[in-house]
Image 1: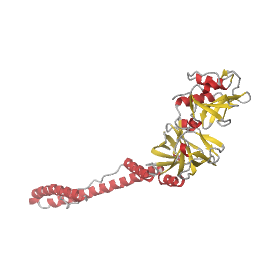
Image 2: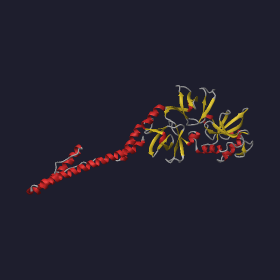
Image 3: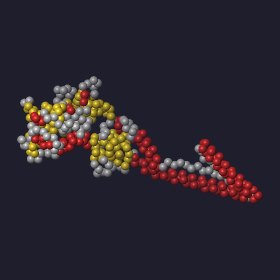
Image 4: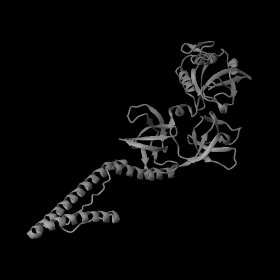
Length: 392
């Protein structure tokens, strides 16, 4: 839609050129008329001076009168031959002004769902949002298909956008704009449930006794399939499955999806940088061996030794025991867990294993001699306690 501007500029330039030619011709005709009047004055020598002065006088008065009339009715004025001519000067709109006007029209056409100039992503997977308009610049966010954005401007083949907490540049090849964007939004806008707690359980039925299918992170948006009035449960779509979440931990609204920054994309919304860094650091050691009593992240560690060494990197000292670590911080609910919190498991009613929660319903731990350090579902065993060590 924005690619038609250059053609419009060229057409506009041709119109201006034609108008200037017409103006030049009008001035030439006026000069001829003045010359004819002067020639007539020369045919009566006895009155030459008087008529010349009179013509000059009439010319000045007539132009003043014509200017007054022009101001009154905004019309072009042509005086009697030999009396003077006033040619109006048209006011042109610069091509840049035309672009601004056209851009305003695009904005008006794209005003919907809280956006003044709506753009809609059209991709098979995710559209990268980059820091600058350069193709190799840093990726600062991701847009899923049918994600909405505010278009701030155009730079070549890139759109400068904001969406959610993300601002950056995306390829225009994958963005609908103007009326096309509004039409697409009308067809895809849905009720979305925004998760208000990290580690929210997705259950297979609307009951606390139902099996947990998976967990979702804080800030994630899930399409609502069933939102019964007054119900304690909201039915949502998750990877093509209808699952249920507690209505106490979601906010339901009709809106377009927004982009995720890279932290949200990997860990969910509302997660501090230190938590992200700690989890990224821990994930570097996936695949390394489990060694009972060990604390080496490369040569081998047991579950509490792995946690101890990861947190030591950030200046936090923890005991070398899963039971002792469970009492080292603040106890929280699993639904409140954020990346970097510790999740504990028990056998025979006694805590015997600890893992680091990394968001999205997953944990990382030194699991066993067979598996070593690995990432698994937080529910691969039943959590019995969650402790917050990082007090951010």
